[in-house]
Structures are given as C-alpha cells and as structure tokens.
Image (cartoon, rainbow, N blue to C red; front, top):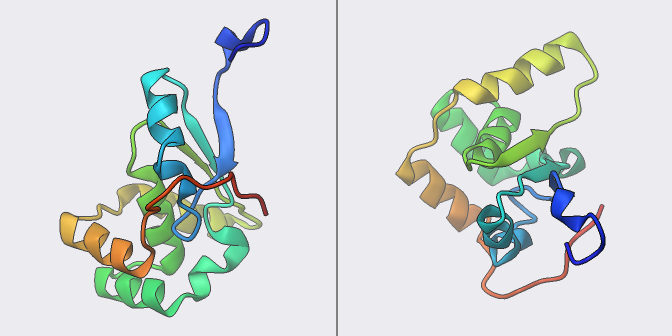
Length: 127
C-alpha cells in the first residue's frame, strides 16, 4: 500500500480455510477497513478438509457435503472471494451448491470448536 500505485490494490489473495484461519486475527479487519476484498485460495486446504471427520459429521447433519460446508463457511463473510478447484461439471455444481447453504450460529460455533480461530497473530501461511 505504501508503494507507488499501492492505493490501486484490488484484492489480497491469501491462504484461507477452516484449518488456516490466521488472517482472522488482524489482516481481515485491516483489509475490510480499506475496502480490500480477501481472495481465499485453497479453501479446501488442497482437499485435506473434506477428509476431516469433524467436517464430515457437521456436513452430514446439514445434509450437505464437506466441500459445501467448507465453502459456505468461507463465503459467509462479506468481501471474501473464494477460489475452489473444479475439475468437472459435477465438481462445479457441488461447489456452486455451497452458495445456497446457510450456516446458523450453532453451526458456526461447532465449526469453531472443531477448527479454532487464531488467538494471536501468525505469519501468512502458504501451501
């Protein structure tokens, strides 16, 4: 932002998913104050999230897939853009269904217990 032209920043692309939530500690709020959207890459943690027993259990209770719950969780925040991988039409359709999934307060609290938010600042994570 301090560099020449830095005021033209259109988005901040960072690793963000249920397992990698470090940006919630301070970066997300910093971006929000400056109207800079977060572009969450690897929202399924390269597929690791969909194998999580906790996430599968929550998804089954909601009648959704683990993929849909993980994407709906990331998409719930205004100003967050999510980039999931899709290798087939069926995959695209499954990802798209996450937009229709509404997570209630109890669902979010259960996800926080399974995947706790950060309690301190952390370095940005990469794949």
